[in-house]
Length: 312
Image 1 (cartoon, rainbow, N blue to C red):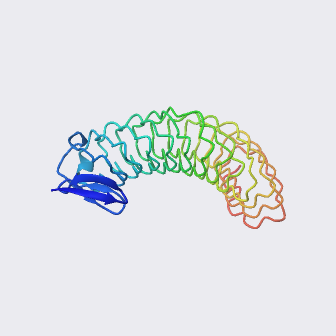
Image 2 (cartoon, rainbow, N blue to C red):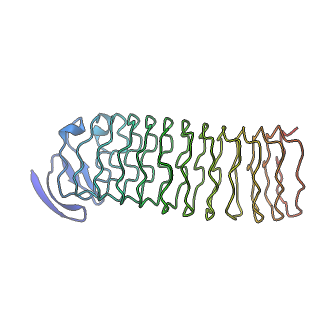
């Protein structure tokens, strides 16, 4: 039966055999096996979770056209693992969080509209994704955006200057060789490049970052250290597993927690000077088999378990 809806998620006519109205969006409940056979009603604003809980998520290869009226695409194609290509995203969309999560066969990302601010997990686990055309100018949340995109090679040169959250953005992007420029606006960048084994150029730690734990962990190809321009207290695991790192950066003077900071940096020859306020250095140089000496320990140091474990 054709029904009319007017409310929070738009104004449109819909077939109740195909769609169901939910508080957060319009959900597909029909029997189609592919998106090419589906017509999303014009006038709908939210397509949040539209196909994520439907049987079609297992069979969809081609996405339906997204109406121009849509502003929310969060989780729209979540788990559609057989989707072959991404559809065009309307220009007024602002939320693309988890939009293509787990779409393992998509190779190229669509152009992301400039109004989009939230791309949390947008392409997470899109393991065939190779190319990203742009970052939207309004982007603020890029956490997990490409996490698990193991074939990603081509990305824009820099993040826009409004980005704040970049936790795990490129985690396990094993083919990525060049990092984007990082703006000063970034606050959180924990595990940002964790597992980017081919990354060669490491950008500086943003000056206002409050969380950069494991930011470059397991970046096995980095040889020269980035600058640390911020002045926070914790640098846990920042370079752990960077087996090719030959030189350590200067550690900020007020750093107090550096456990695992250089763990398993096997090529590191000389340890940096330790800041006077350092309190936690557990496993800080664990597995650094190339170290030729040990730094002076500040009197403030309280926790040293495994600090030089495995060092010759």
